[in-house]
Image 1 (cartoon, rainbow, N blue to C red):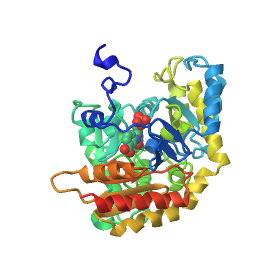
Image 2 (image 1 turned 30 degrees about the vertical axis):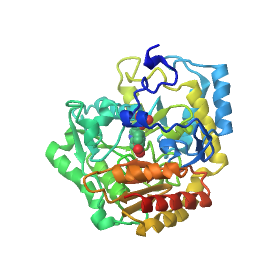
Image 3 (image 1 turned 135 degrees about the horizontal axis):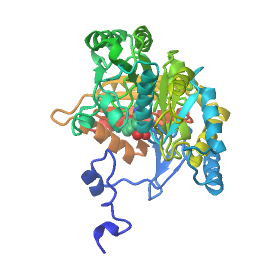
Image 4 (image 1 turned 180 degrees about the horizontal axis):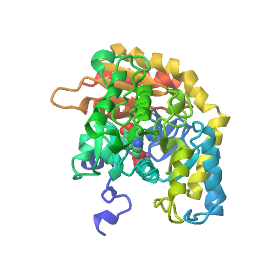
Length: 440
Ligand code: PXG
């Protein structure tokens, strides 16, 4: 039998964002999860400091969510939402509208964060055209932004490696500067003091391109994948003011900040800044079924519908949009968040989390610590000539000691399930301290 069709062979699966050769030479496998823990094939428990990948905010394999998926699968395995309806999709959209910022109550469903971002960008373009401003076509992203891997999200994203292989990408895109400023803000607790002025770069882009050509600005309220970059105090407010002044839509990509991660339903609540469009995914279903969504203001929805000269108003959607299993998982997830008060729990734990993280200030190799909500970033001095390797070594040492952390570049990123206990916070931080002491 050829090697690739042996069931246990690791060859066939082309793993995402993974050093495939390295991994397959030294694989680390997970076979089960429950609550705060993953389990290896040998039955070793690994405490999850990452919620999977910013995903499982309620912890793993929560019984109510599991039961809802099982029931939905047996009752209505699949129905298209193209010109047909099933009740769960409407119910879930209504439930989401109930926790989103006031007025953001028109919800499109997708299957991932990447699809949510591309959907949000297309809604922005369709809206500008519908109101007679088709000339507003430019999309503004940000350096070090991550908005998934589809062409729109890759284009507005600001990660060199993610962009450089793929040709000219989407045209008419420009970028704001990122807001990481370790020289002035190192070891800030919560939002950093310095950097609201980074938002003024939008004025420069308006001068360069003219506002009449700019459709939307998209940012992550907290940048996650590129190393946990917190918005400086006043930055998001300033960006909102400038977008309003220049008649530009503001899109918040809340794929990681949505659903309680910052101690509020969405970052828009936490920062009291109202965007025009919000993209979300991951914790929307506790990641038990892949799903994403885009919330738009009623004004955007109404404008696009009213301007349409064909029965279908918006030529966009996915076969899986509003999938019954995902909607069932989403409803059960929102029930779990509410019944267990998890968004409030994240807010209550934040000071303890902050103190625990900042206790690592004197640990080896640490050059910055950043925190907000139940997010943490620990930036390390890169090993000379081998960037990212020190953080990867810490990741490995922690894994071997039973703690899962995520690394990006030389940054250790933490985003534990919101059900975490204080003793578990201490355990994770203690394990990282030991790992930092052992790596070269
Ligand atoms: N937007 C944001 C802000 C994200 O964080 C996506 C879009 C794309 O979502 P999908 O579901 O298409 O993957 C993301 C994804 C990390 C890491 O290391 C984060 C993500 C993906 C991979 C790694 O923090 N976020």
